[in-house]
Length: 190
Image (cartoon, rainbow, N blue to C red):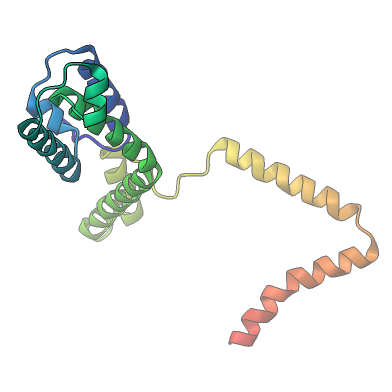
C-alpha cells in the first residue's frame, strides 16, 4: 500500500472524524495511523488530564457540570485531537505539496542521470536518459514545450511586434537601449 502523503491526509482525517462523531467503533491503531507523534502525545496527555480529573472529582450529573469541570469522554478527546489535526494538515498543505514536488523532481533527475552515466559509448546518452524517465512514468527531459506553449509564445511575439510598430521614435530608442544593456554588462564582465 502506498504511503499516505499530505494530499490524502485531510480527507482521510475527515472520514475518520465522521466515524468517530457517528459513534462507530474505530480501533486505536486506526486512530493513531493518521496522527503524527506529536498529535498522539497530545491525545495521551489530554486523556491523562481527564484521568486525573476523574480521580479528584465525582462524575458530574448534568452536561452543564461536565462543561464547567472540563469533563470529557475518551471519544470527545479523540474528536478534539482529530479536529486539530485536520486544521494542521490543511495549514501544511502548500508546504507539503512543494516538498512532494521537489522529491519528485529529484527522483526524476536521479533516474535520468543514472541512465545517462550507464549508457555505453556510441549510444545517445540524452535519449537513454529520456527512455529511463519514460519507463519510470516521468515526462521526457526537455520535452516540456507543448503545442499550447508554442502558440502562446507565437502570440506574444506578434503582440510585441505590434506594440513596437506603434511606438514613437523616443520609445523605440529606449527599447533599443534596454536590449543593449545586458550585452554591455556581459562585455564589462569579460
